[in-house]
Length: 257
Image (cartoon, rainbow, N blue to C red; front, side):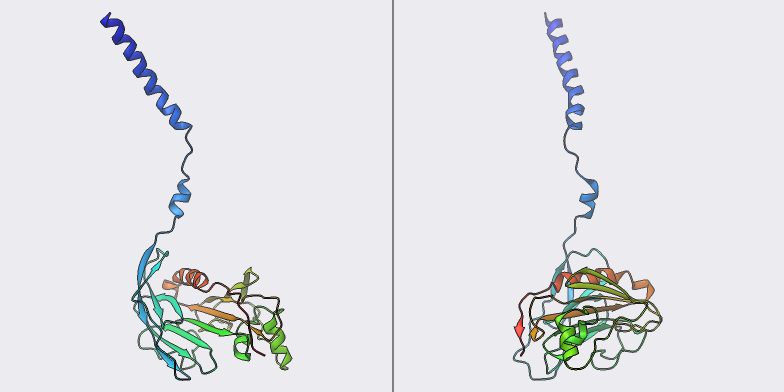
C-alpha cells in the first residue's frame, strides 16, 4: 500500500514539473527592448550664469542647485540664469543677456573665452547657445521666420519691407512638427548655428508655435545652437532633446499691436 502511494506521489510530482515550463511558455513575454529603453531619471548640477540686463530687473530669478534629467550621457551639466536653462558640457563657463526689448540669450562656452552673449561669436567657436524671444517685434520674428516662411512672423517681416533670412544651400532642415524644426550646418557653412562657418558642424532646433492669428499676435519662440568639437559632438543630441522638452510650444498669443 505504501509502495502504491509513493508511486502515485512520484507521478504527480513529475507531472507538475513537466507542466510548469509549459505554463511559463504561455505567459506574456516582457519586451527586452522596451526594458532597455526605459529612461533612467537622474540629477545633474546647475551652474548659475551671470546675466547682463538691458533694463533694471524687477527681481532676481531663482536658480536651482540641481535638476532632474532623463539623459544617461556623462559629461553634461545644466546652465541657467533662472529664465533660460540648457544642458552643456560639464566644466564650461556661461553668460546670459536680457535685452531691454525683452529678447534673451544664454551661452555656454569653454573656460577662458569671452561671454558670447556680449561679443560676436567667431566662426568655428565651441558654444551652446539659446535665444528666447517673441514674434511681436522684428528681432524675434526674424529669429525664426527663415525656418517658417509661411508664418505670421514672415508676414510681419514682409510688412516692414524686409525679408526673412532663408536657410543657405547646404543647411539640412527637418520639420519635426508644424511648430518645431531641427537644422544642421556642416563645416564651412555659415548658417543659423552660433559658431557655424568654421571647421565644426553646428546643429540646433527652432520652436515657433503656429497659431491661426494675425501677424501682430505675438508668441514666444526659441532657438538652440550646439557647436562642439568632434570628441564632444555626441553631446549635442542630448542637449537638443532636453531643449525641445524644456521649450515645448506655448499656445498663448499676446497682441502686440
